[in-house]
Length: 420
Image 1: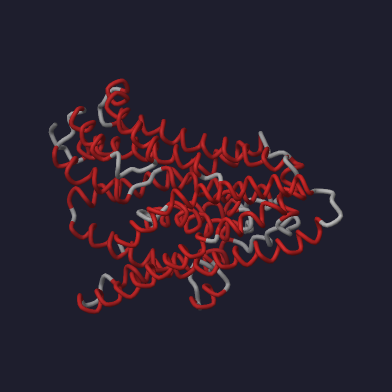
Image 2: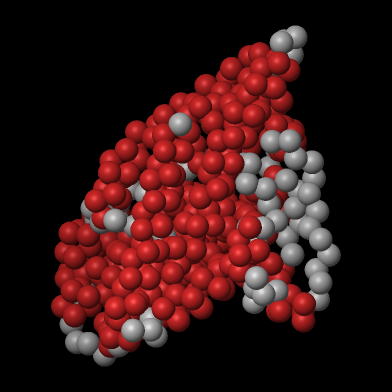
């Protein structure tokens, strides 16, 4: 698994550049050819190409998410069973991830109500994807809603990409795996690990041809929305980057809870933030975080256990940003946000962000945002376009994650009663 991820990460930056170039080229070509007599024929060719590529991504979501959750829950349950500092750190991570998802849903929804995306660009994006305004079915009531959490037929839930009961079943299945005999558990987890690795290979293949699919989708957007589509994408980048920056700034409050002054924490975390900004890698920032933690007087127990655990498992900006993407997609397609479904999406965002750590950015984007769009009832057609501009928000995601990693390291030592 580690070797596979290294290979995918090595190609990740090149893939991002290629996708971004394809997006810009598609928008420009589509805008330049808009109004030409043959543009409809070009759209008729581009539409199935982009649709096939998007369907290829869709086919990996259910098996990848399910296997990720089973393997991730089994591993996390083993860590909790070990008890002590690691278990307390995981509990802290869970609370903060839920808080992050809640923050993202409230902020993005609130900002969009006050500052909606440009209407002309939104209409073009929606028309280019072939979707009219979508309305969610009427909410069935609390009793029926609660019963829907338990899938009477998990296979049917998978076939229908009904993510909420599927995630519940995956969580319960992963927990149950930890209660069987060791030899059987190792075999079963190994099977799902193999499924996960296989899906990663499939996604890597799909992403390899992503420039073709993104160019086709962007050409349709450019032809129908013109250069105004760039305004919608800029609007999206500002909102999502702002959410990630806000989450990172709120992490300074965790340092205050740990008894660290804001000035001291800012000086200690700054070198790690610089590395994170330039490399978009939390792991690359680890040496600077270790130095910062020692500068703040964190205990060696926290530095040696909590900090590596945070870098490996804890991505505080992910739930906020991922649910922000889903809310933005719902906004573009005119999907009304049902408060009950938003609550469910918050829980799913926290769980999936914890289970999908360590995956390359392009894969993580679809793995974590796709299920949330399905929960909220938002179409997935916008995700390839948003992936192409994800590079900018991803910078602030990483900076926020690094800030949170150092803050929870200091806080965990205080909650455990460790002396500096």
